[in-house]
Length: 55
Image 1 (cartoon, rainbow, N blue to C red):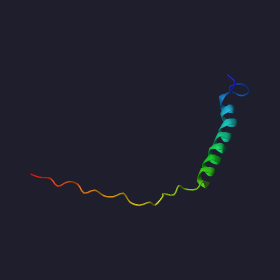
Image 2 (tube, one colour):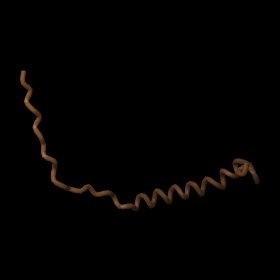
Image 3 (tube, rainbow, N blue to C red):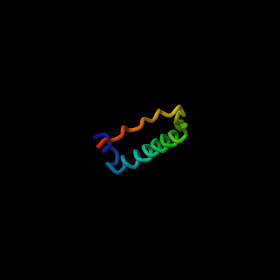
Image 4 (cartoon, rainbow, N blue to C red):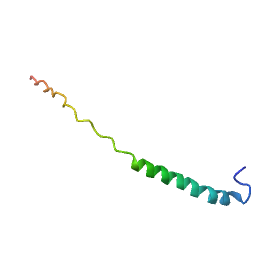
């Protein structure tokens, strides 16, 4: 396996984890900077009264 060369699985994890954590934090930071979606305020839909129940 490619990751197991040169020091075993622990060394591969020790090299890879900081990079993946960095990319995840960068993506989260960029996502927090995105503007929030604004809800469009349009006219309210007409409310229709429910038909009366006949016994």
